[in-house]
Image (cartoon, rainbow, N blue to C red):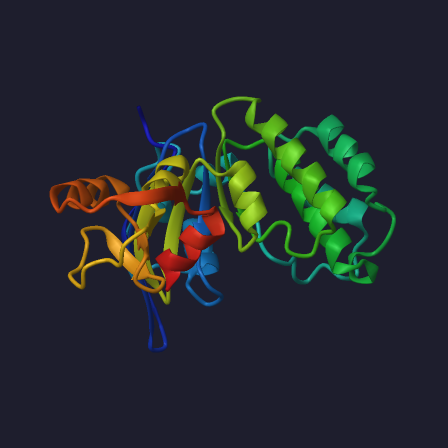
Length: 283
C-alpha cells in the first residue's frame, strides 16, 4: 500500500532548539494524533510538511509526490488548519471563504454551508471581531470543505466549547467516510485523542519518540497490585512503583513473563487510562 504521507529523517534547527530526526509513515484511512508538551515541535512539523517552514534535512513525500520541495500541485491534496489565521482580521468570513475555496478543485460548498449552520458561523462578520472559538470553527469548516486527501489540524478544539467539540468529532468521523482520508491532529485534548486517533505519535522537546497504535499502546501499559512486598530488583517492563506493592509496566507481556519466572503472584491488574499513558511517555 502506498503511504499517504512519508516524513523521513527530517530535522530542523531553530536557534539552539533541535527538532528530529523524525520518520513517520501514514497509511490512507487513518487518524494520527501528534502529542507533546507546548514547544515540543508539533506545530513546526506540520509547517514543514506544508513547506511553511523549511526543513534542514530529510525528505517529505505527500500523496505519491516524492519531493515536495520541487512540486506545487500536491498542495491541492492537503488541507492545513493552523492554530490561528493571520492577516485576515479586516475580511468577512464570507470573503475569506471565497479567497480560500478557489484554490481547491475539490471544494464542497454544500458541505461548507452545512458546517456554517451546524457551528453557527456569521459569514457576514469580520474575522477580527469574532471570538477565538468562532474563528476556530470557521477554520475547521474551511479545512473540511476543501475535501482533500490529507488533513492537518493544529489544536483544532483548543478554544471550542464542549458542545462544539462534540459536533466537530461527529463531522470529522463522517468526513473520514468520504474516502481514504488521512488526518494528523496535533492536540493536548485527551478526550479528542481517545475518540479519534488510530495512532499516536509522541514528541518531547524536539525529540521524536515514535508512533504507536493506540489500542495496543493502552494494552501494553498496565498497573499491578501485589499482596506481598515486591523484591528490590527491577521487573522487566517496569517504569514505576507506588510503594512496594504496586507496579506500573510499559510492556505487560514482558512483565507477566518475568513475574511468572520469579514466582511472583499479583492479585489484580488493569490497563492505564490514556492520559496516564501519555504522561508516562512524556515524563
